Image 1 (tube, rainbow, N blue to C red):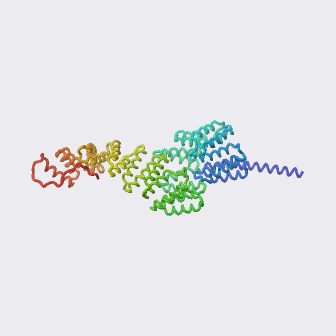
Image 2: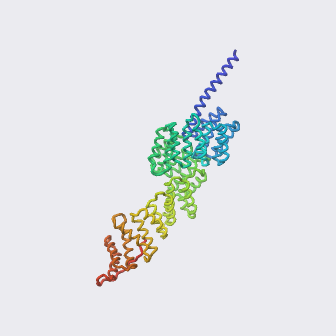
Image 3: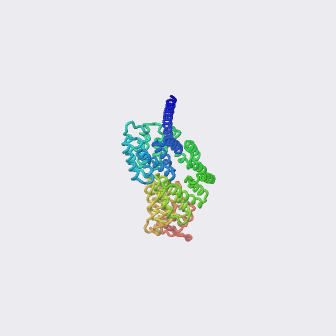
Length: 572
């Protein structure tokens, strides 16, 4: 009887343990996946590790634990090695687990082993008979996520569409992954449609709302109201969704330090504390203009991180030293950053800022150009590309290297879909002061064509043409100066109009006196100039000289003129 009682008690205890373990595991798996959704990867890692410790055969927990290692955007080689070791270990005891096979394929995709990865994915589909939403979604994510540069977006879309056709499908994450795949094609329309499909399933799915905002933000200027609406909607639907706070922290970082700091606080409150968080705190010191404090805080973070400090801390120090005017320390920290940061994590701004810094060290001109070209190729936003090119052009201009500045200002015009009169002036004028008059005219002809009512384009064409045709014999400058006079006289009160009119008048005085031999017409332009400035001594001298030598002027005894008019324009 006692044995029977013991057996019964043991059976009940085993049943209770299994029951509570299953309930706990079910809740914990959901908790772990929620942490993944919120991009709190360290918290997710803790949850999945506990589940796996309690149930080593749990393939779903093993898959997600591996994902928690490789999901972070600042993934290290150790993270990748840990995930690979985990999947290999679990596959050795469960070689036919579709989820673990996908996980291993994901690792191989990151490593650039595309054929091996594809073979794994197809094996997983076969083993699950193409009927597992989780497996198809995992394959889609591995190929579609923004961090997967080796992923095949078209393949991801195919597999994710298959998942949506499975009976009882109701997973918004599948549609979001499909939207991410379309974004890799730069197909914003289909991406937004996919994200909206996710919202049809769950209207509160903040990840989908946030992703729609990201699509509009990447479209650049003119979309601010739209993407800000989606970011605010994402926050309203789910205030715990940290990624949107991170984006807004970065967005306001350069323009509104107070707002940026507010969003940083919200981001840190809703995310895991990790080396990235320490770096963000240091970066706020930089944004506040406290460059020495930023360096001090970055150094504290580096010491805290030990052997593998967060790479962007060195970037932050480089920026801070650059603002403090210490080019040597800025350069060495940039080089440390480039050495430690993964190549796929380097951004256009990194290369462009380093390039302008490197220009301060003679002999690096070729390398500087290569870095800026790399920055332009890496970035997708026109405004950023233009910013990189202008930064280098301004750096050359500050060194009085006008020809190099002109070349890079010219590249701005090649990039911008709707370049401005300022863009054209920057390129044309820098060529002009470099005595590259044909190149200068190339840009001022565009200026005159695009802005026919603006005096500047015609005026600069007149100046350059007068220098090319120094005797005035070919009359190259005549049509441009005539247009200058026409526009200037129509509204002489415009800024600088009188100065440009005066120079054009002086050209025509010399041109008509020396080339066309028409003293009367030359005198007309002298009088026009004196109407603008009756005290101009040069014009008075011209009037005196021409009147004396004009056969149509009544003869009278006057002192000899001091100088004779010239047809060559004043370059200034």
